[in-house]
Length: 140
Image: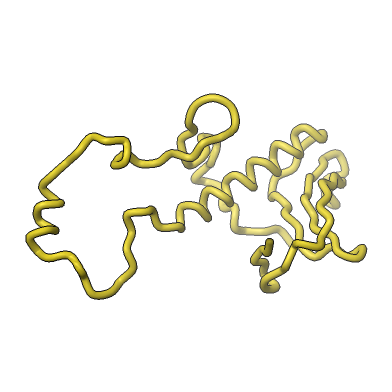
């Protein structure tokens, strides 16, 4: 397993993963949760949300929310199964016209929805994603 980071591709097969909580430097009364990948005692990669919490539960929820939003954005960039690569068409004009004019109601043609453990399907993007918050900006 590998992950793309700002510093390139990191192979995580021989890493140890930990969930760490720490106090914010600027707000001593708030915690931040991080997932870190450690190899030979050195942190190679980490996931850290912009938001924090007053306790471990809130800090973990902020981390989970951040990971879900980033994962949803990543999954939105993956083309669906009906997407075809650019190139010469192998379908005749008649076939394309007939395909465009026919509709079926099979589940095969229905859009796929992401599933979460538990019951029922979940709408994407997550309901708590805010459009007024820029999750790509990082505090220094």
